[in-house]
Image 1 (spheres, one colour):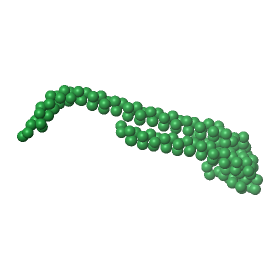
Image 2 (cartoon, rainbow, N blue to C red):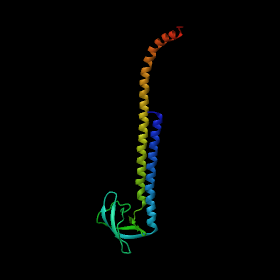
Image 3 (cartoon, one colour):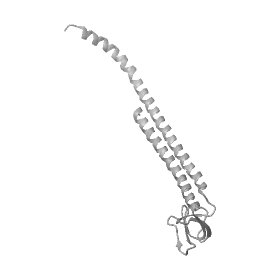
Image 4 (tube, rainbow, N blue to C red):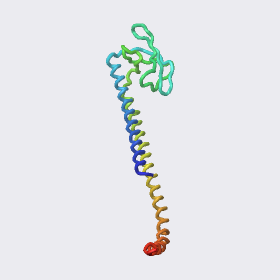
Length: 172
């Protein structure tokens, strides 16, 4: 592989790794921002879990002013909930769509965020090593192929070149 192309591919992989890391840290920072917004105007109520899937839990709850809410994007940190369960939730009084189960915080986002960054860098690192190894093997194969043809060309061209030199020196 051409060294310029190899370098560009590896720089592209480096950019991908940096982007994945930035996304992972943004995920964690967003969770801490949401938690600080809830802590700034925290209200606590009982809610009923309406539906649950792997990444989402929908709940219905009534605020002290009597209005019913169901956060559009579900609860923050929705693990280990089951449909029909009644749980205590904390929400931002000024924004009832920002809600989490009582006792859960952004600390739960650190391990997933770090694991995304680590797995991303492992994949990028393996791809970089793969590109370098591919390039090294291809260059070695090219050098071996060129090395096999050069000695046979040199033997036959050595005799021809002596005759060619005599012809070029003759005054015709």
